[in-house]
Image (cartoon, rainbow, N blue to C red; front, side):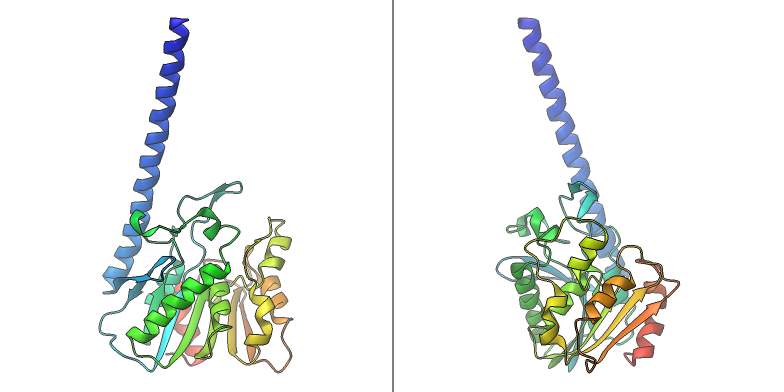
Length: 285
């Protein structure tokens, strides 16, 4: 009996040690992700900014020298590392490759800033409201969108802007659309590989529905007069033209909505490299 006790205790200790090691490894990787993104921004001279919305603390990066602008362009990040694999949600949604940030850094206007999603790029003491549902099935929930609205208002006031241009990548496109549906000060909505109709997206890929999330396609009435440009990659197997067309089909023909399909691009390639040229085509320089 005594030997069984020690065997059991030894196994428990070994299991606890494994858990501690895995937790330490995960924390180290998260710090690496945050440091890598901070380095990307700092090398361009951009500085981090914490925006407390009451519920969440959101991270922004802002360029040097930007003090005031009539029109502020805000880039909104994608979903980040929402899932480790098909059945395991991530413990932290900070992106491995912050493509939304990289797009913002390539904006030549000098009047663009970057906004992360709730729970991305924040330290433990700023995760007071973060739960896994906020980057899984409820990634576009009313409370998430409310936090983004609050953060965007803070950025607008900080730079004394009168009008906004919202640019969202992947899941950030959904946030940008849902925010634009509630703000009369948005002049233009631009999306890149955007999840604009998550109901069609989950059905297409046979995924669990995003219960508790608002769907941009359902906000078509509020968005039907807004100038919109949606970039989509012809080779994008994640959020391809089918999703964008399903969203666009909700709007009347009079809506100033344009879909620009880049046949050679996928969900990641080659938006960052070609971004200044794509913006130039829109007259956004």
